[in-house]
Image (cartoon, rainbow, N blue to C red):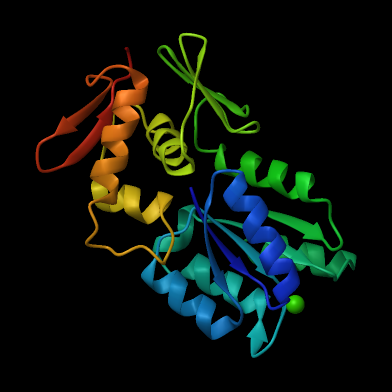
Length: 223
Ligand code: CA
């Protein structure tokens, strides 16, 4: 899953990036409104952490722009701000934010809220995803097949996570690149193919993740 952190405090950005990457997410950063608008236009994010007090603009307006901008309907938004007045929280939710977190906050709480929002679309509604013999604990960042823990890299975990939220559906390489890798990735790289290959090897079978010729990959619902 790919996140955009919109925040101008560099220390906070660094801490968030380290923590979120460790939790298995691809993370892009925008330090001001213009930068955020451009990245939201170019990329499709699963979730945006949006600071309200930004130089050169207002987070409320950015939130509204995401909601009105067609493609941003499925993007989750958490407003993160030092403003703790009731009217700001109400306005944030009215502008289309899915959640609202007041600074200072504890990082584990932020992570729990991110997980909760990202699994809203997925069946089950807990931090643990299960498809056939596969089990993915998104809170602990652990993956299992038939009870045996798999030793996955963050990208392998990210690919498996994305596929497990869409079992039986074909997911293209471009979609995986968009949702599992960050902005520093060369779009012409073969990293998706290599990562899927390694993931298949670690799953112990080629057939669990099918290749659908010229369309992408599909995780079998029953394995
Ligand atoms: Ca700020």
